[in-house]
Length: 86
Image (cartoon, rainbow, N blue to C red; front, side, top):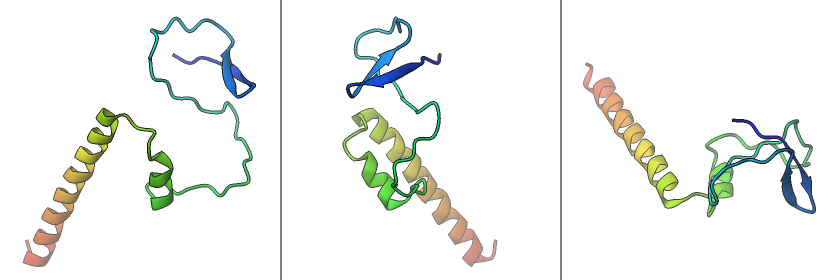
């Protein structure tokens, strides 16, 4: 589902009724690039992570940490194999 709208007085005004339940979380992306003057952040950089601070639900943060833990485990296993000559 893709909804279109316009920013008016700091709020998003949708072109059509969204018919979504109250409290539904949504993701909002500009329809075209917006020049903010700020440099583009590299995904995963400390600056990009800090920009997310306070914007995630507990469930979203837990899901991200689970993936991070899995990746760390894979890294440890890879390094162990590399240095063990496997």
